[in-house]
Image (cartoon, rainbow, N blue to C red):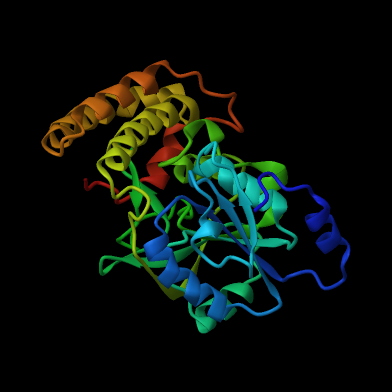
Amino acid sequence: MDRYPDESFGEDRVNRQDRPVLTIVSVLYGGHEVLEKTLATWRASIDSSIEVVFVDHSPTSMAEVLDLSWARHEWNPDNPGFAAGVNRAVELANSGHIFLLNPDVFLTPTALARIASAKVTGPAAIALRTGGVEHSGIEYSRWGFCRDRVDVGRHLVGASGGAALFPRHLVHEQIPFPEHLFAWGEDAEWSLWLISNGIETTEIGDVILDHVGGHSVSSSAGQRLKARLLVRNRIATFRRALSRGTKVRIGVPFFAAIAANGARKVAQGVGWSYLQGIVEGLRMEVPPRLGAPIAWPLWKTLTERSQRR
């Protein structure tokens, strides 16, 4: 199995006339017991017009325990994070449209055909069903917390990194996923920069895919990592993506909600990791902005009806 394989594979595909109409890209990290079931539905759903690219950040290559011969697979055990994995997979893709999908999602031929036929010009959210709960894309609370959008009456801020369709150039040439965030909340910040640049997200409204959820963070170490990175990234995005006026208006409830969640995290046994994340979020260096910060009038619109916790 190649680690960082050379680019000849991709160049050959690009030069061919029969480019794929869609590339499914996915970042792998362990959980082969779940992926044996979900990826079997991917293989059964694709045809020659669909390309699949896996960027694998597992400590041991998933190709050693799963048959991935039907897809492009690149292994990088250094694990630079989900956001970096998405950017790399998009770079490897040979089609003009990308279907970003978590590997623990079940596919059907009908759903994939519908997605492949949607020639979107911007990002599109695709609904998932996790634990019986349906959600489509991302919403923000008025005080600055991103979360899965369960109530479709709430403003669609962006597509979830779990299931999103977008033109390749959007990530490869314009606004890449924010790699400094590593994972958890990176899709929300990406969505804010798209909005800042006048790019709105739509929905593929007639597709719902079943999602297992949590396969890569089921261990106690995984839960601690998620607790630390999610709060860190919320604070980092607050600092980077919002205007001074927006931060002044929502700063008190934002940090009050951070503190309130701390008690919950202590009860869950991840309090210390959560506290580490708060400190890191306040101290970490954030990259230059990718557009104008989100000003208060726009923030009010984006968070309309998002008054629940």
